[in-house]
Length: 423
Ligand SMILES: Cc1cc2nc3c(=O)[nH]c(=O)nc-3n(C[C@H](O)[C@H](O)[C@H](O)COP(=O)(O)OP(=O)(O)OC[C@H]3O[C@@H](n4cnc5c(N)ncnc54)[C@H](O)[C@@H]3O)c2cc1C
Image 1 (cartoon, protein in one colour):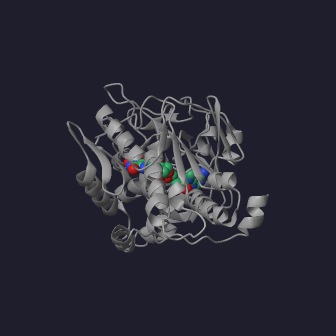
Image 2 (cartoon, rainbow, N blue to C red):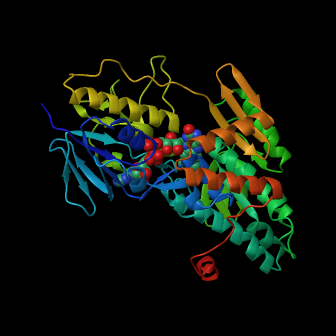
Image 3 (tube, helix red, strand yellow):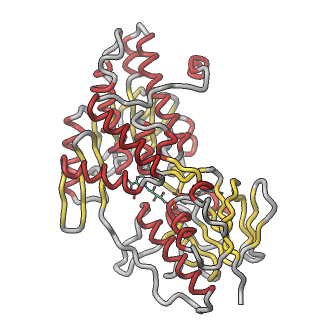
């Protein structure tokens, strides 16, 4: 019989659900995360586009579990896991042993082997990324106001987004509104409405995982908002302030990479079966092959459903996996040998917003767009935000932005930007 030490690596959607699901199970849980907060990634684009400030979409993990004496939260980065010795090695703490291990470290931005592009094209995975994008775009407008050179102004007010999935679409729509509506009256020498947002997608349509009708709606809405959408277009190269696509070089002050994800770095140190993007291949009960007490959940895992389709890298999937693994561990702690039923993903539908009054919603046979979809998007995102304070703050911010066409989170801080930009 094994003991009751459970180590969960990652306090994202998967890790948190697992820890919550183990309540009252008798497990002694150690939850390690390299940040002190749980991050609501679906609203990261709102921070990047100055709609919300960082604390509104993040919540301290320690505070979430303040009434759970069975959980010890460690702020640390896991550097390595010794699966044979059952040890988790961290940057600062002494190694911690486990009886059950849950790997829930999520995903990172992937540049498809072109890692040099990372220096010029910002990913959107963390609060730091979101604030960096926001500062870059806002400072572009400031520098354009300072410049007398028309070409330079155009470059400073150009944003290129690579990747036409939900994140790219949401960013493009929100940035288009930033120039055309929010900043419209704030400058004297430049006209923010002249700002360019260019969205590049390698495939033939936007939102490739959504039904075609909804992809078309997203395309029409973005074009109506002035976004230049380039479909079936590959990025050939990214250099400082330049994006190269077939036969064209686009000068751009801000470049955002929303085109690909790979498994989080921790996957690299594990000698277990993986897919091409480093996602850990798991058994039907989400355990690693050959290691029945080690589970991978959420974006770091790769698992197919019985119909052959891949479980998507979305928050409901991570949460369902967390709950499932908590049940498996709970049963084992009670003495059951293996899980009775394999993991099944229940698709609860997909939503993506394009901007004010515009979103697409897909719930099985039900597909709709426009105001209703947008309201539903608002409702769902408020509902799943953690913490009453965050929900209330976000509701207030959105109401303010809606009524006055203003965005509150536009303060630029923390560095000598002129020197930084010159470098
Ligand atoms: C910009 C963006 C928009 C999105 N929009 C949506 C959406 O609208 N709807 C939707 O359903 N999904 C959306 N997603 C996807 C969704 O956020 C992910 O599927 C979900 O977060 C996966 O949960 P997870 O627990 O696997 O990983 P995460 O939530 O990413 O959590 C991983 C945690 O592990 C920690 N960690 C990583 N490495 C280490 C380490 N070595 N040591 C310690 N801690 C570590 C991280 O700090 C993090 O807290 C979006 C994602 C992004 C980036």
